Image (tube, rainbow, N blue to C red; front, side, top):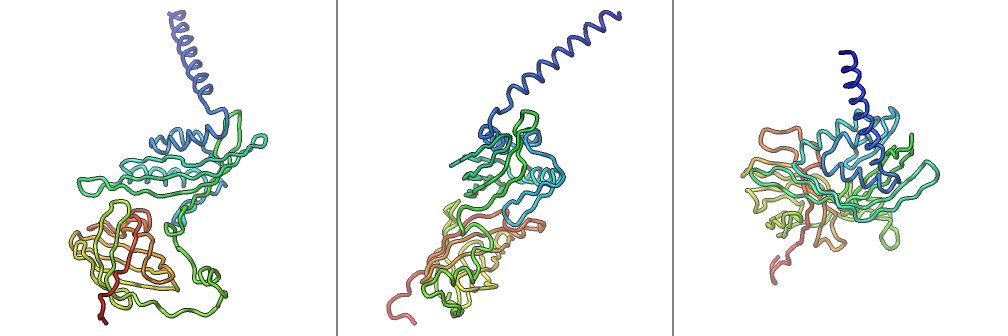
Length: 291
């Protein structure tokens, strides 16, 4: 009986040792492979792999879009879990990746598309977020681990705030410090939701308030600082509301930016800027003779 137990224990030990050796052998041997493995694990919602390949130091700080800051692994893990629950499906193709290595340290610059699929009634809504990311890795016990990272949108129209008045004025010829008059937003606007190619029209007054042809919707402008145009939208037809932020062109006839949900029915705990898409606005020319 004792001999049989010893043989069983020894067999289990050999099996466990083989699996451990196999896992170690399958670890990425270089930082670029480690980065690509982590991106793939993110797309596959593979939290155990992400946990294994990210450092758990209590004082590590990382920054995500929409002003999110994570200190230590527990905060980041909670954020990852929430995203995996909210997104029904993820696709994360890497567009560019450059890695530098010096000894046991490596750092990288990467461009990727973060493609989220979220539930929109019986269908899935696809949102493409063009991202860029930088980060630092360290080789610990022969294994590359991500220490800290920082991500942002590749397009200025995707972030928030899109631009500050001081930044915009400094780009203008003459670098004039004077503040320009508020633009006249009155008229009809063609609006395209880029990801879904949804198109509708808005009829706005001079201050940027008025209805639009989507679920009996209405836009309300809350602030215009130079060309930065911010406001809210409300759709009684499907009981939803949210915010928007777009950047007007120099001539005031076009605008590009983002929109997001703040409420869907009775659900009000929606993080701002996380669920939505991108806008392209175009002001229609007034008919000849119109005032």
